[in-house]
Image (cartoon, rainbow, N blue to C red; front, side, top):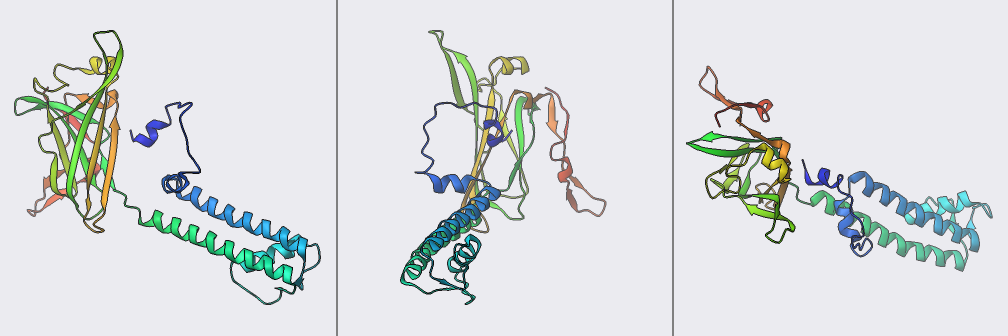
Length: 283
């Protein structure tokens, strides 16, 4: 389960917030529809405010006196630097309002352009994690495995992966404590992560998963967090991705089904339809 999805199941109260002070990063993390709605609302608010200003001072040629619609349309033309010519300021007060709106237009346009560009250029990893973890015997030892795939047709250069187990423990003093363990991986680094990568952790005597079964995982409220950090081979930007597995995602006596097989013509085929498929395996 992704971390963003997991957060919806946690009720956070009395947490310190600084929404306005960190508004830029809040918007970068927001969904596109929310950002576009905010930009539209911002332009609407600015135009409405200046429309009332034009209604108050008047002095707009060919605008009906006291007409909010005409004042609003003139504000839109001014803010958008359209200038049809049918309406234009004819008094010093109206020209002053136009000058102020021009300054506001520069600021609003710069903020909107910068925010949209930042969201477009923000590096994002297109990595997919297998839905479940497999625990089966490999080379004589129980081994935990998961799959990672790169949805892009490029490479993640110098990819580093970490797996961290979190579980509930009771200290000698009787206090409940959630302790985190870094799992040693058979290989934690890949010079170039392409289409698929199987991550493995051998469950030996030194592993925190030693002699652990499904019931113990549930009792310990165990979670396994996986993170990948690397460099996008196309944009040369640092990218990262993470995933969190709950106790029901640990499948004992299962392994990931083979995705790669040889075709009759001698070529190999990688079948992504089997990415999440599991098959029985000795434990």
